[in-house]
Image 1 (cartoon, rainbow, N blue to C red):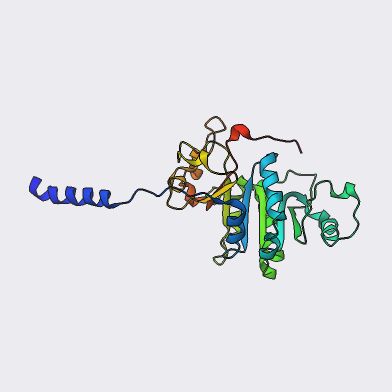
Image 2 (image 1 turned 180 degrees about the vertical axis):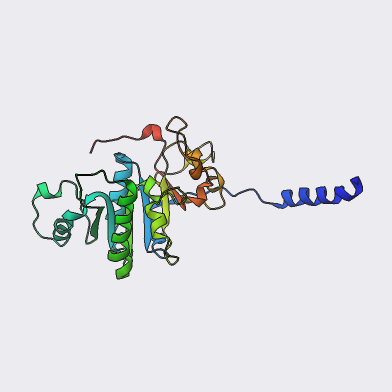
Length: 258
């Protein structure tokens, strides 16, 4: 019996040793990497942490980059109620718009800013899934239907692919022809996952597929004290997001109220 089993044990051992260890993720210039992503994707989703000042500064630097307007046409934002879309359109077109009408609207250089929130129904709470469906319809009609490209900026939870409820990304990717380039922004130390991350330049972006960052459990991307990660989210990070945006150690982050 031992003589029969031994060859199988040796074969398994050889196979295990033959498997290469995952190569470390490599930091890329964040703005260049995101701009380059539009060469192969109509939609790039940049997950954010609400109120994070460094994240908002990066976003403004990105859309202010002279290369950005050459590769995309639209920015879809969370928090802007769609009934105010005409105000934004007039502003982007260069018309005079009162400052108080633009309190929650970006400055965008010849980019169309699409407001991704449904009209407010004050008689009922608007569940996140309804908000995601509204945004998906908006993007399908105003961006994909017109063969345009868009940067999507929402809280990162709207972009999780593997979840029990429909996220914005899962709704968009129901169409097999649509593939979103999906970016997570670090919200905890990534050093325990890949030990050189905190020496990376700020900001950096790294592709996670088949790297320590990609094969790690998605739960490891959250501080352990935040909340219990639902079982449906406990999958490899690379099944949730395509890339990680590194904006420095979270101990250096600052926040502002909205």
